[in-house]
Length: 291
Image 1 (cartoon, rainbow, N blue to C red):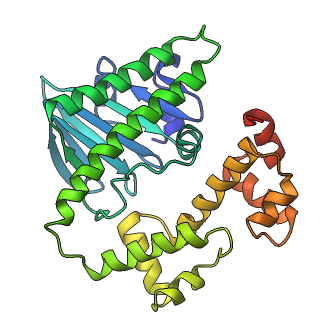
Image 2 (image 1 turned 90 degrees about the vertical axis):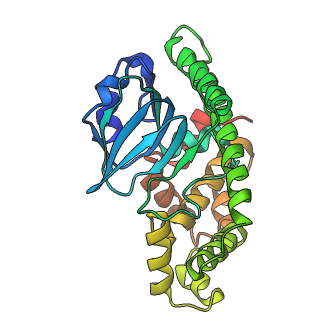
């Protein structure tokens, strides 16, 4: 099931249509047997056990733990122990971008093998703090009478992501002292650093491959294997994020933004933006402008 199909199976108070779905502990039994694809999935398991199938592989997660999956294969919630208490959060790219507003909390996928379920073991206090953030998000979702319902949801999602990112950074720092970086790690790290520095000007994958002294084909194999998406998709997402930020917070015209992001023509930028967000730049600005 996609995110949209799942949203239709849960109460309206559990979601923002076309943006995110939050499944609280009382609703989690509905997720049993569901297969999810094409969206990001956070599972906060406060206690108990959860059995997940990722593609053809089955794994058991024991709480307290945070599982962060960018779904590269269908994920099926095969079962939960009787004492399981869990939350499941499914945001899409647009909601994540709108909420984080350019911030990049540590992502568990950055240097994880995409064939493993990225599970972070938590201390009970850490799990309780993350659950508190999701509880606030749950309350905001249910408050349809609040004129700022959507903005509050974005705020509490942002708080959750920052808390999770802090925990992931702490884990990564500890692991860095123990692990030896592989060649794939070096390539992936170098590629991401280059993208963050050059995405506005360089949209072509060949540029990044040349800078890394490898073939475009090899770069594609490494990035696709480790992140579950193509090098172009990584570059595209950075361009989209910057375009959205400029449309929301700057007074620059669409033509100026297109030029800043090095599109050959404004029409090419508008076509690119609409293809990946479903809305023309002017419509997005009208709905989200902060200036």
